[in-house]
Image (cartoon, rainbow over all chains, first blue to last red; front, side, top):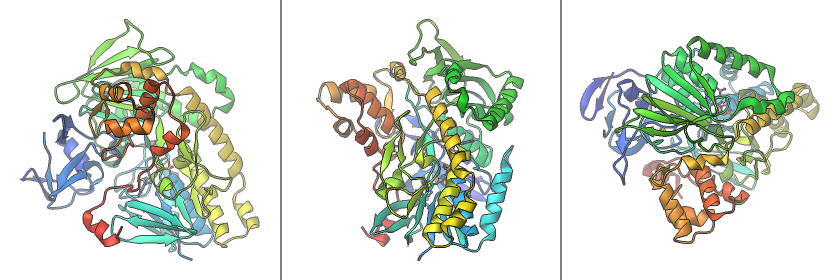
Length: 79
Length: 458
Ligand SMILES: Cc1cc2nc3c(=O)[nH]c(=O)nc-3n(C[C@H](O)[C@H](O)[C@H](O)COP(=O)(O)OP(=O)(O)OC[C@H]3O[C@@H](n4cnc5c(N)ncnc54)[C@H](O)[C@@H]3O)c2cc1C
Ligand code: FES
């Protein structure tokens, strides 16, 4: 299936979270922080810490680690 | 009567569901994970376990076979309430459920301690590193350190080794000769597991260093190196023992924090654990909480691992069956043979572990003024000190409000306890039991869309 990563079409497989999919592509950094513009990636891996938040299908603050990839999904990361 | 609601499909929720089903009852299991299994049996869509998979498959098979048990996976409870003997849970799929019986089986999450650089990409919790590996084979890095305290560091390091990660060291901050005082409580099954992990680690020549900790992580935008040091019995760095090592990721874990968000919303009484001061649901011998019909099992009643979660889940499931009139108390006794003594034995072992692998106060010596304490709101150690010493905050709640610690998206799940300890130390009086309880007060358990909020009112 295809998904869109920062507007670019990429091949993805089902049954994977957005977070692990990106990590496997060596995308450790998922966002920059609000105040200090510092990079953040996955920390807790189970939906607790909100460090992995990305924009998915135009909805901000979605936790990459607990959101399953879907065909056609549009993911925006800042790195 | 509507069917029993089980929040959490980990070992405790699954074993409770099976007992309810065996008694001819019905229940719905809700879990935010896409699959049953919880943290211990987290797995890819096609389940494969390196060991201990049989117990999972047996429970899953029995749950699937019983038409009375529905599994609603991939769904979160974002709010819960309890009024006049009826519990209500609101789900992020826009629906809500009510029942006279509910089981809190929400488990735990990693307890974390801060240090300079713990917010860099490449720094994960030990459980998180394990979770992404189990769920999809994802690796946190290529060359990593595993550090913190507790027996859980060993399986994490062993799974990373088996997955092909170069584990540069396992750093256990405590000295495990503390064990000598607890020999009576040693659990043989656990010793066998530990032996297996040691075998994997020693075959891969992974150094296991007792009395060591990661005191800093550094790098340009991601972890490139760590500073490790020997710490004394109080976790204070021993001068002259600092080493710097290259690596691309770290997994740190300091035990677990019971997830009390849902329990708290249901208004149940809680205890502050005498050993580690974690807040746990208060339950009676039948795993029933202070609220009639609200039961709790697994890590939410105190961290004790998979075997305790399974045992407590069974006790709760049988007690629920009695309360709903499905089986007699005599029948319940027959079904419960050995469970109470098993539970006592494992709890004793769990308490022994908590004492040996305790978090000692000296960890605060690793902090520098710019170290982030609250990751969400980016609040530093210096800022927390300022609200105490310059603004005069003299209790945990005020210091948190003024510094914004714990007010971000995670609602203090990650920093709550550790910030309470820092503030307590700055003020000069440790956080009170009620201040520790306050950390778990989150009226909205999980963020939801405005649409769901509008649809469900309030
Ligand atoms: C990240 C992590 C990894 C771990 N890995 C291991 C391991 O590899 N080996 C090991 O022995 N132990 C591991 N543990 C320890 C673990 O706590 C116990 O082994 C065991 O899984 C506890 O069982 P439980 O039933 O109490 O809770 P859990 O297994 O934690 O199950 C609780 C379930 O409740 C769900 N839940 C919680 N709140 C909500 C909500 N509001 N809405 C919907 N669902 C909710 C969670 O998604 C979870 O699936 C891990 C713990 C963590 C936090
Ligand atoms: S990594 Fe913690 S919420 Fe996703």
